[in-house]
Length: 483
Image 1 (cartoon, rainbow, N blue to C red):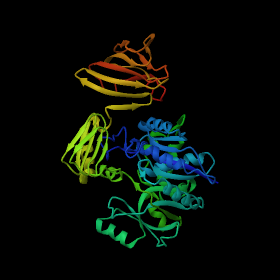
Image 2: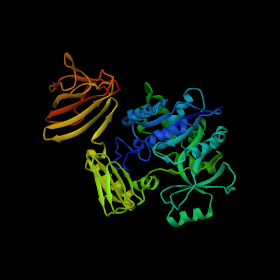
Image 3: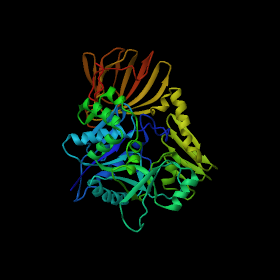
Image 4: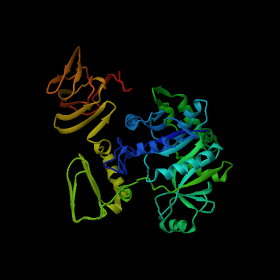
C-alpha cells in the first residue's frame, strides 16, 4: 500500500489573466475551462488516484493568508476534506512551500509520498494523468525523485525543458533525467523536437517527504534551516497552520527546480521522469485559454452574454453585461463589472504591463473585484460617490461578520432576503425582509445570519472615509481580531 499526501501549491499573484484574475482572487480559483475551478480540478485529480494499492490522505495546501477561505470554501463545494492549510505570510517561491509541506508530513511520524502540483494547470485527459501518476508512485517509493514531463507538440519557448535518456517510445518506462534546460529560443526548441528525448517541465513532482528534506539539505541547507526555524514557530488555528512570520520572511526565495531538481542529475540523488500526454496546459495567458477551449465554427470562444457578427478566432468573457462584437478577429475581450480588457490575441502576454501600472498607481482593480469574497459570504460595491458607498452583502447561513466599529462612517442596513440578527452597542434586534436599521458612527455592531437561507442586505455607508481599513474588530470567528 502506497500512502500518498497531495500537496497543492496554491499561491499566485493573479496578474496574467487580469481582469478576471486579481491579487485577491488569482487564476487558480477561476472556472475557466470547466464547471470547477483550476484548484478544484487539481485537487480532484489527486484524490481520484485512490485504489486498492494507493491510499490518498486529505490534501495539504500551501497558500497565502488572504486566500485561505477561498480554498477552504472551494474544497467544501466539491466535498473534499482539507488535511491542513499551510499559510505563507509572504511569498517565498515553491522550494520553501514544499519544505513546509514535507516538515508537516514528517511531524506525524510517517514518511508519505508527496505528489506536488501547482493549483493553476488544466488536464484535458484525467485518465492519462492517473496512469502516469500510478507509474510514478512505485518509483518514488524507492527513494527516487520522479518528475512528470509533458510530451511537447510544438517548439514552445515559454517552458523549461527536461532532457532524458533515449528510450523506446513504445515502451512504458520511467526515464532517467539527464539535465534541465532553460526556456529556449524558437530554433533551439525546434531542435529539441527534432532530436526527441525532450519534454516540457510541468512543475509536478512525486517524492517521499524525507527525500525532499535530504536533497534540500544537500543543495540548499540555508533554505532548509530557515524554513525549519519558521516551522518551529508555527501556530495552529484549526486546520490552518501559520509559520513564524518574521522567520519565514527571512527565507531565501527559490523555486523547487533551481533549489534541487536541476542539481540532481549531477549528484547521487536519483531523478527520473514519467511522460505525460494528457492535454496539459498551464493557462499562462488568455491565448492559452482560447487554445484549450471548445470553439464554434468560426473559432470563437464565448462565456456569458455575448452576441457577435462576422467575427473569428475571438475569446470573450462577459461576466455582468452584454458584450457585442462585429467584424473583428483574433481579439481577447474580458468584461468584468469594474474593468474591461481588449487585446490582440498575439499580445496577451503583455497584460502584465497593465497590471504593473495598476499596481504602481495603487488602484483597487489590481487587487480586488467589485464583488469581494469573505469567509462569511461576499459583498458587492454597487455604487459610490463623495461621502457615500452602497454595497450588496450576502451572509451565509449561520455565519457572522466580526464584532466591530468604524471611526469614520455610519451605516444604514436594509434586509432584502432572509433574517438578520443585529447587535448594536447594548441592543440586539431581529430584522426580516423590508425592515431596516441604522448603525451610528462608532457604534459597536455585528451582523449575523441565524437562518438556513442566505441573508442579503443593502448597506449604505456615509462618512468622511469609506475605506475597508476603517474597521476595528473586537471578536471574529475567522482569526482576524484586532482587539
